[in-house]
Length: 606
Image 1 (cartoon, rainbow, N blue to C red):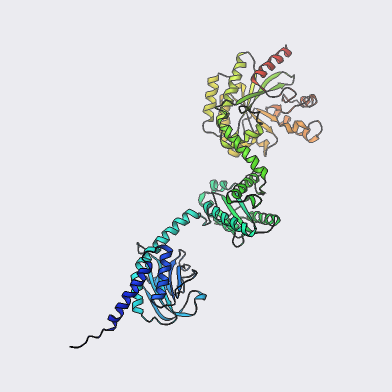
Image 2 (image 1 turned 30 degrees about the vertical axis):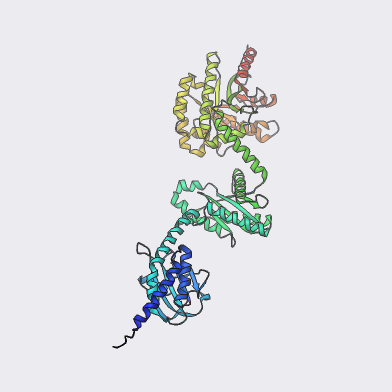
């Protein structure tokens, strides 16, 4: 009986089974990066090849894609991952055809540290949608000794590698959504916080300085409103690129909000150097941004905190940079501010004040004070209603402190209606007592453009029964910021109700004379800044004379504010001013004191 001799295929089969078994044992319990590393290491050992790697195809424009290795092994040793262009590499053939590609020799390796020419075996890795996501690649310095075994092993483990790579791509996308801004590709707030934290830890060891910059785009919302958010988004990308061009290696730019960025600067030695870089950044942003042949100008405001002076952890550094940014914006923007402890003291007090304001109306902490207005004979003819706030158990809060705050928070709407109702109620009381006073009430631009303003005013006038011709609303030139047409419409409705309109602080705005023409004005109030210097300053006297002459020629009533002494009053009388208000005639007082003042004035007139 003849003895059977195994052929070549039969001799290869046991070896293939052993190789597969060894690789399976190495990767069986592994997943993710551990699987990739174990697989590439074991492939180099079991198949006796120089290099093995799993490459991920990175997203990009056609002709500009890259391969990034997720695991790279050389003769049983893990290597640092590499990234190389897909174009011109042997992997491009696999990418183009979607089938395995083998080259026996002469292939130039994708990275210089991998050596000279090699044999190449590339196997495509597909996701469940049959989209090519990567490659399993083997390389050797000479022709592969067991190409059939190699092909079989690649084929068997490609399925598992594809599954793990698809999961990695998915996890990377989730991580990118969690840590990067979708529009600009910059790190987001969470990622930035982590990077500042790491930088602080390193700075503690190396005793280095580092700085956090909070950067805000001044009035960028106007671009979104006028040009649309698509233009705004494109400009944000241009702005991000421009700021990033000013950063040094290792420094980080993050988009943390709509038009707000944060920057981590690590390569600084002195505060003066940091200041120079801040100025440079502001200067660079002065240059116009071009989008589809249109030019846009965007300025920035910045707040800066420095480690370790302004904080020893990422939370404090970021918070203090934000405090400084707020101060820069209060100073009209287009500048930078370094953090100082006093900023936080002021900001904390401001925040505490805001909390109290939200409860002030329901706690009945507001009250109206009334300042008298007189005619040329010194007779009491009317009042200006002024809101005052005294929190329970505390002193009076100055109006210049809380008025801007109630406007910023929107509380001006409910508080403004309360003021109007209280003033009208008091006016009705005096009206029933036989006094023919008028009552002037300050009106914020926020109130004027509120959708409910006209019907609410009408309702309050009807409910209190006050004569609307005795009510006057004082407006300032800031109403133009909310649209001239909108303001005109509302003021015209007020005129139809019989309410008078006064232009307050006349002469201190941008285009006062045009307002006299455009708005339905009844009264012009000369600002106290001109009255204050009327005795010593020729310009103030001339301005007051001009305001009075122009107003009277247009049939407007003129009232001078801030009259503090007899000499000022006399000069204004000589100029034919009609009405006056100021400390000479009385300070703002509560309703009870105002009623006593009425009696005093009445006795004097009798």
